[in-house]
Length: 338
Image (cartoon, rainbow, N blue to C red; front, side, top):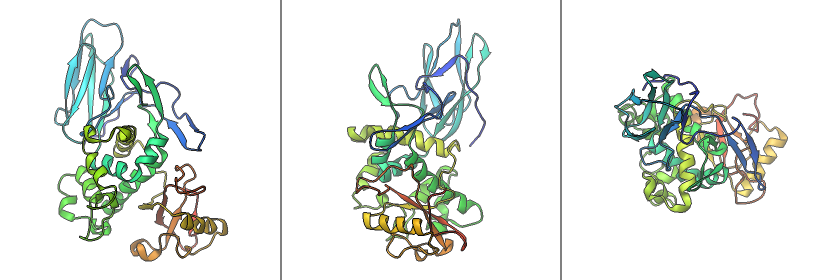
């Protein structure tokens, strides 16, 4: 997978390019964080399908001739019509398209096709939060997820998976997270994500939506193709594409400070976590939802509460997710500092 960098295009717009200020953030009436970032010169598309026009490059400038050079035909084809080029992906990876206007090459457009399993697990685990945190824009065909939309919760959940991959590649073993070693190395980096997400020891699944019979299993499977996703989950799906792409290509920095796990606390567990946070205790509160015994290879562990993560619908003051990472014996057992 090639990691060449693309630069902003002075006169070329991706059809779904962000309008407005990069890094613009705010919150809605329920305190759900809304954010956008500049995605000029970038395109995020999915093997399972993308929102209308979100997979299209448009050249908006006076011209006599126009060509689109596909620099990575192993990853995708181009369907060119007039001043547009639609990206038709057939493999995960990062590629580039160079518009050539009147014989002069413009800066390349970076095209990211993330692992579809990463999109699927985001839908399986955090579809409600993706939907609530998505920033929308109005187009002729109706409201759609803005191409620069950022889901804080989605970023945190997806980077825990990337962190697992990094821990394995930094000298660990796929067995650290019960991933199959053969599957893990079969087709990197795509196979890294697939193996980590679908890891199981035969009875325990690392991510519950992967488990047959889990309430979210059908939703996880359906997200393999956008056309199979329920209409009320399309916003979450389209946000998941953007989130997965930015995590996969490295644009998203880890907001969790190295977390390798997450879970949704109950109101009772959230209260215990809050008590631990306020007291600065050196030991995790019993019954808080996790313990050193759950992650012996990383003990002692720490629970991270991210204030910007969407609140749970389970009750006031309950975060949708908290995160687990390693800590030193001198650090508190619960923190809200990434």
